[in-house]
Image (tube, rainbow over all chains, first blue to last red):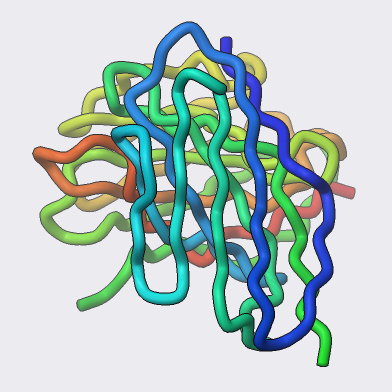
Length: 110
Length: 115
């Protein structure tokens, strides 16, 4: 099976940079995705790493290191609207399944 | 374009009753996923379909749960009989053909409360 671990909560100041880490255990996977979920809302796709290295999408970047079984989501120029839960998810099952991590609640303060 | 549509948005029922959740995926998407989210267990995949065919139902908790996808634009998740521990938010998601499951589009969810 697969397991993913994330910090339960991270707090940062508006305008700052924050990194949300994800460590995983799996026998094989296609890549690592990141999703954002606001309270009462649905998860929405943010980023995907199929290969090792950094992927940049606007203020969000995601990193994957297969050798370290580790990835992270980097959020720059934090805004209050970034307060949400963030989930990493392994793509497995022939590329057809997502296994989600425990989620990290990000609180952005003034 | 309309996103994934789920109904009802909220459902309150009593233990032992049958519950049916409905989902309409995004037009043109060929994979459909049902998830359950709780504080204790997080976001869990229950079952997914590819081209209307169930591919993996290993996440379905027990025989009380069943899912169908009679055509490309409709799927149901049924719980019979329902129990208080089934209380959760149930999400349906879909993804495009020719891509891996990395980018899924989620519906707004159905919040189920079983008393």
